[in-house]
Amino acid sequence: MGFVLSALLFQPLYPPRFPVSSLASFHSHLHVDVSFSHIMSDFQGPRIAIIGIGKVGAAVAYSIIHKQIASEVLILDLKEDFQDAQVQDLRDSTSFGISPRVRPGTWKECGQCDIIVFTAGTNQKAGESRLALLQRNLGVIRGGFEKMAPFKEDAILVMVTNPVDIMTYFAVKYSGLPASQVFGSGTILDTTRLKDTIAQRAKVAPRAVHAYVVGEHGDSQTIAWSNMAIGGIPVDQVLPLDVDEKHEVAEFVRFKADRLNKVKGETSFGIGAVISSICTSILLDERHVLPLSHYHSDYGMCFSKPAIIGRRGIVKSLDILLDEDEQASLEKSINKLKTVAYATENPEPAIASRL
Image 1 (cartoon, rainbow, N blue to C red):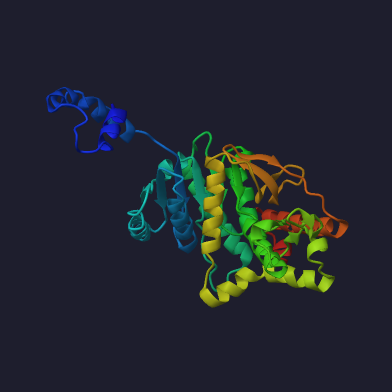
Image 2 (cartoon, rainbow, N blue to C red; image 1 turned 60 degrees about the horizontal axis):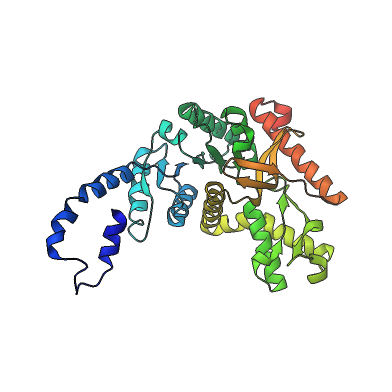
């Protein structure tokens, strides 16, 4: 009946589609469309929950809303007044085009969403050690997991809280979800910055650059120069860089967030776009290859390497062939992460002093 109604709406007003006398018969069937609308109102499409709605969480929410990939976006923050204000502000942006419903969510509701994006965390206090901050953030995520449990069976948990590799490791450990359904944003933003930097030097579009940053999302990250290509051609044939130039690029990418933070206090637009892109890849089962922080059983740690991502999370972790120096750098990065993870749960003065 809906089809008939749609067809009628697009007919010219004159001459009539059918005699006026038949309208009574037509209207007698409109109850079919009413019941159909009722059914559609109960339809539940993909739902995404965002835990933590500060500057990063808000940027993630805004980007997801305007990607139009979910039917509902649930917002949860530890500060309820702030949460409600952010929800109202985000709702004001949904009046244009097709947008999802945006509303506050409970812990239990968030645990039943298709994707849970966890950005919540605490800021470092004056004089507080990095280890103490890690322990407090671990308390935040463990408390959140306990309130959301049990999670929806096929839920995907995306960690954004920093240090993301460590938080992803503990999310795998304490969420109760399969490791393939838990991963962090990892070095995808670092990789994006690397591609943009190389693209500017080579005067090509960033999407023409194929490159990865692997290991930690942080100071010990490693650029896989030996795998880098521009338009499928090895980078050395298109943009030859000497050792000093490669070091300059690496340092620029490694400390870009620090430079931006000093000027504007935070970086949120890039990570917002990154997370909405990840959510799209999940919900549409796009099977994109992205450098995400995920669990590697042979190392017992989460760090970034390329992985195929789909509706079930990490479909497959891909090995990337590195040269000797790159592999040594990656191993060093992994060992650093393992030390930090151990010290977070087992604080000992000798270990803590090195963090």
